[in-house]
Amino acid sequence: MTTFDIVTETVTRRLPISTLPGTVFTWSATGSAVLLIDEQQTRRINLTDGSAAALPFGVHFPIWKATGDRILYQFFRENLTQNTIAIADSDGTNFTAVLDSPSQFDQLWWGNKEQYAIVYDGGSNPPQYQRLLISSKQLVPLGPGSGGGRFSPSGSLFLANGIDDNTVFVANIETGTIQPISTPTLVTKSVWDSNESFLAYTTTNTLIRVSAISGAEEDLASSITLADDEYILGLAEQSLVVSNGTAVRVLRQ
Image 1 (spheres, rainbow, N blue to C red):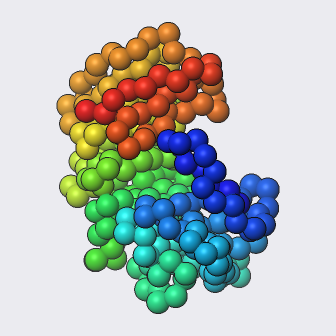
Image 2: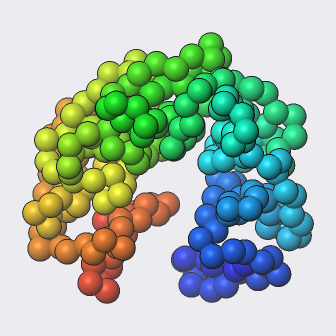
């Protein structure tokens, strides 16, 4: 496994850790550890010394707490009918069950508002986003959608794909209120620009800035073509749009 500094464009560390094809990497916000998730197991890798700890079998979709010391995940085994969402230390110890559900959720998100999480149930009719109120251990319907989402930097707002093609909406994580966005776009082609706005690549090949509060839009660049495997990246002080091998930098508000 190799870590790479995107600013200096240099390799910072190489660790002799084997991975399977299709392994998913989830980096902690502190940058000190990473979760490696494959079909066989989930491992926590300490990036300082390369030490590894295997999480218990049955851990699915682990996501980091903002402080990097705990994770939220699903615990599910094929011979059991119950799916459990739990919180534990990042090595899988000291776990606490948050919610038992007969559904196995397809996606989980946990932002900086740590008392809330978002789950997505693609098997419900219609497919549904739900708010998980961690302190009261309750699920509250948020709205139908097609999966995918991103928290704002503060964790107060959540950008999600709508149920219809190329539609998105913004949800207030505390109140559950929803702001639909009219311009056709996708979450995978969007990135938060501030706590109250995000950049989006539209189906008309235009880069826009959208207010998550009012839905107002500002055109930033036109004639941009993003292929299916090209995305808008959110960096520390700017966003980077890679299009046809050319990078367009947009300073954050």
